[in-house]
Amino acid sequence: MGRTAIDKNVRRAVLDARRMIQEAEKNDCNEAETRRRIERIFESLMGYDVFEHLSRERAVRGAGETEHVDFAIQLGQGEKAKPVIMLEIKRVNVELSRKHLKQVSSYAINAGCEWILLTNSREWKLYHVSFGQPPVTKLIHSWNILTDDVSVLAKRFELISFKSVRKGTLDEVWEKTNVLTPRNLLQAVLSEDSIKLLRRELRKESGVLLSPEDILSGIRRLLNETALTELENVRVSLPEQKRRGRRKKVKKVSQETVIPKLSVNKKTGESEQIKSSTGSVNSQQT
Image (cartoon, rainbow, N blue to C red; front, side, top):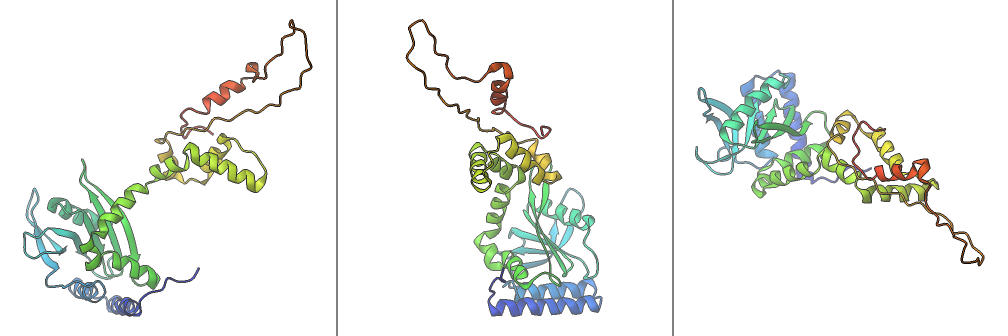
């Protein structure tokens, strides 16, 4: 697979940003210097006006003392402008941790901001905050400016660029993320229509007729632990199998002769098995 074509100016900006952070890592820059370099990236690579769109040390008022987030990315100006992304910065050679995420999550929740960006200039992590009870913080994308492919970096930085944020692209990303949950995907893959299609395609390729239960068992073996857990919450309706039988040619008989109808022998229990295959299936079945 070939690399995605990137505008030469974007490529140059990504590579310049990479070199700048490589120098910061080598020189073990402090947090203030790391912050200045990140400002340069927002300006040169993502198209922000750092004086207008980046609110430095923005006050966040919670239940306790007033705290300050490193940067609040906003489209308007002044304290009344609603932050779009809360940005927390750590020194270049400090590894990002759960403690740092908890810190910036509390800022975002108190400010009513749905998006979080946590970075040490090398690693970048984009999170979404859902304001339920309790609020839930979910990782959407993460990337490393030193090791990831330039095409990946261009795509990730474009997502949080001024142009994309102004267009509401982050909202679209969150909508797609909600649709592409393991449960929704499993529900689609395990629908009756999907299983019928899989049976038909597999039979066409292999010549083997599989039952719906065979398909479900095969899909189970593809799933990881997280997906198997989600499968417990998915209602699966397996399509009913049709039993085909050949009609025997019968000669003319007298009126006293009864011609038996072809049917499934109930003594074998096959009919009950078919009926149960249309019911709900949980992840404990094999």
